[in-house]
Amino acid sequence: ANREKIEDIIAELAPLSPTTATAESDLLQKKWLLQWTSEKEINAFITWGISGDVSQTINGSELENMIPFRKGGGLGVSGSLSIPE
Picture 1 (cartoon, one colour):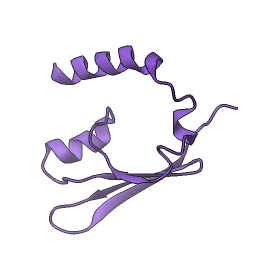
Picture 2: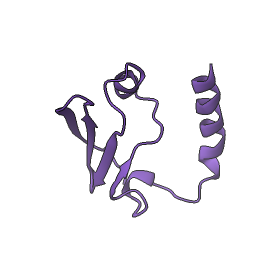
Picture 3: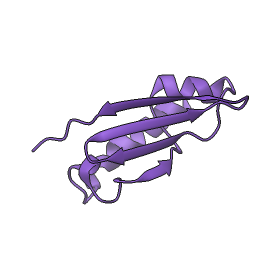
């Protein structure tokens, strides 16, 4: 229920952002700790206590999520962003 409320608030705020083409903005072209996501797969690792700090990196049109496991090892997932021209 809380997650749905947060997603609704984000949807309301998104049109107010002065940043267009968010993924290619210099504000996000870096590595950071992911504080919130709607990605069910990433949330499962956190909810089940398998991982804590998940990092995300955007470099150009490339996206990488790194999910370190609390007991060692981790999972890295890479993909490409579709940036409209």
